Image 1 (cartoon, helix red, strand yellow):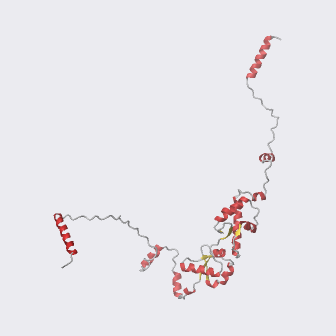
Image 2: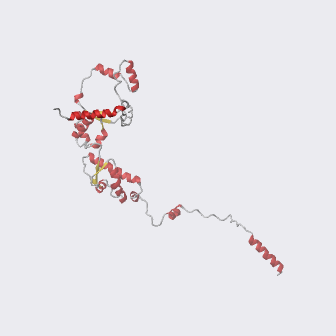
Length: 292
C-alpha cells in the first residue's frame, strides 16, 4: 500500500479523535416507565417497619391529641363519680381501670401521674401524691352546707352562685334543690340565660305599695350613665347623691426630711457671759445649803 495514503489515514484518525461529538439517541427508542407507587413505598419503608393501625396509634407517645383525650375522659369520670357521692381518692391504676384505658403506653401513664393530673384544676392530689380525687368549685356535701354557703354569700354581699357550679360540687344536686326550694331563690341571668341561686332571706320580705312599684318601674335608667343621672338629679334640685359613690384618692404630699434643729447662741450680751456663769454658780450654792 502507498505510504502516503497510510499517513493521510492516520492523520484523519487523529483529527477525528480530537474533535468532540454528541451522539443522538434513536427516536424510536421508548423511555423507561416511571416507578410505580408500590415500588416507591417499598423503597421508603424499611423492611422491618411495623404496620400503622389503631392499636399502634393509641400507644404513640408523640400524639398530644391522644394524651389530652385520655385526660379529658378521666376528668369527666371523676366529676360523674363525685356527683354520685363517691369522693374517696383513687390511684392511677384504678382510674385507668374504671375508664377502660389500661392499654395506654407507659409514657402516657407517667405523664398523667406526674404532670397532667397534678396540674389539672379539676383534680386534687392527696398528700402522699399517689391518689387523686375530684376538686369541686365549692366544698359542699349536703343541703345544710349549701344553705350555709348561700347565707355567707348573702351576708358578705358576694351575690349568688351559678347553678352549674352547684351541680358540679353538690352530690345528688337535684334531690337537694328540690327539698330546699323554699329557702332558695332562682334567678335567670338575661345575658347568658344561666340560673343563679340566692339565699331567700325571709326577714327582708315587706309589702310595697302598688303606686310606688309603678313609679319605680317607670324610671328607666338602663341607657344612662352616672354622669347623666347626676345631671338629672341636679336639675331637679336633688343633691343627696353627691357624697356617695367612689371617691378619687387624693395624692399624698411628700413630707420633707426632718433636719436636726441647730439652736443658735444668742449674740447679744456676749460681754456679760462671765457674770452669768458666776450668778448661776451662786444660785446653785444657795439652793444646796440648808437654812439655819
